[in-house]
Length: 138
Image (tube, rainbow, N blue to C red):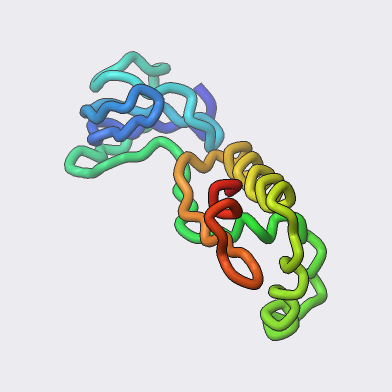
């Protein structure tokens, strides 16, 4: 057992891996989910437990607001004010090919997956107006 280990016990777990919901336990070690198991699963002796019965638990992160089309610009605007970004955003994202849109949203999805996101609401957009083909790319 490590000092940063904890068990979330008894919650209703919505697990995308097996597309099922049931009561169980989640073992977390160092901020990383190590195991999702049945209620009362064996854990290292002395592991602190938090009773989450009566709660829905989703093992992963949910990003409820992202812009996949902007992933090519991550890390490039640290000196920009919000006003500059909002004014330049349409110019920066305009004239992208459908392949560019696909790659930008794929890069964003890969980055979120690497960081533990299991669900996302992507507010990607096209300039000058959306197209069916462009939306299929994302």
